[in-house]
Length: 133
Image (cartoon, rainbow, N blue to C red):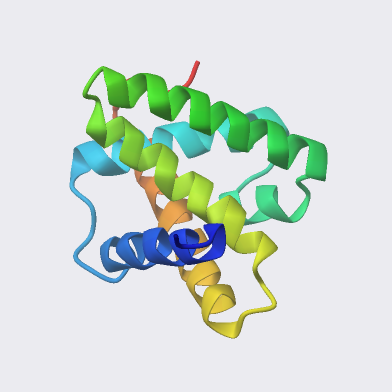
């Protein structure tokens, strides 16, 4: 049975294919950017990267629990695009805790930029309401 670290590395590798691939379509950027924008605005931070640097352990755990609960509920409804947006943000949060690994630290930095671009795109275009209310 794979460890939770191995499972995380596999999920991160899949997400990094998106990060290093073509820019996300408008719907994907809106879902990811909208959710991330709502979170960073509530925290009073300008970017996802800035938000992560000030996140307390308690808030980190709470946000991951919220992502897990909302992701599971959305998955049961078949809302896979929304689940993917949540998974990207969750992997970004977890990657922050794995910064001692140089490869993960590098992916974390790229993922922060990807999320921040989605936020900027969301803020510049009309989009649906964010996934988590």
